[in-house]
Amino acid sequence: MTLAERPRGVHLITRDVLEQVGPEIATYDVGLANLHLLHTSAGLSINENACAAVRRDLARFLDALAPDGPPRGKGKYEHDDEGGDDMPAHIKGVLTGFTLTVPITKGRLALGTWQGIYLFESRDRGGPRSMVVTLQGSRRADGRRYA
Image (cartoon, rainbow, N blue to C red; front, side, top):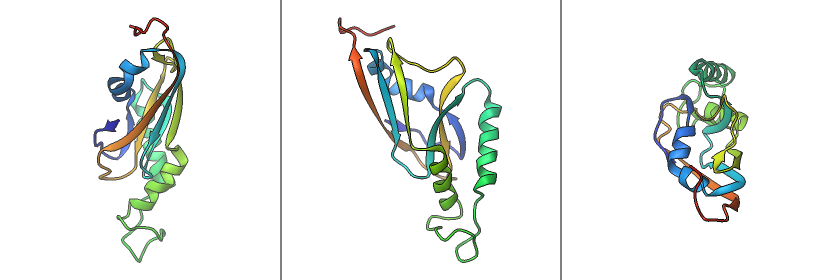
C-alpha cells in the first residue's frame, strides 16, 4: 500500500490502513496483520489515537534526541548524503522501528480503545511512503466479511 506524502512529524495512519486493506481484513476470523514500511527514514508505532498532543510531544522528543545536522563537512553526522535531516531520520527509524504486527479479531484490527497506528515521518520531504501489509490467519468459513 502507499501512504500519501506527509510533512515531518508523527501522523495517525490507522484510517489509511483500513481504507486500503480493511476490506481484506474483514474476511478474517482471527489472524495477524504485519505492516512493514519500505523506508529507513520513517517509522511505525502504535500509540494514543485521541489526543494530537501526544503525536506533537513525540515528534519534539525525537527531534531533540536526534537533531538535524549542519551542512556537509561541519556536522556531527558523517552520513548526510541527502541533507541535514538524513542521518537523524535513520536514527529515528531505528528507534521507532519499521514493522508492526497487529492481531486481527472478527474482521478488525485488535487495537485498544485509545490505540492507533502511527507513521513517524522524519524527513522534511520524505515523499509518499510504501508499506507491505501481509495478512495471515483463518478466514470466515462462510466466505463473508464482517461488518
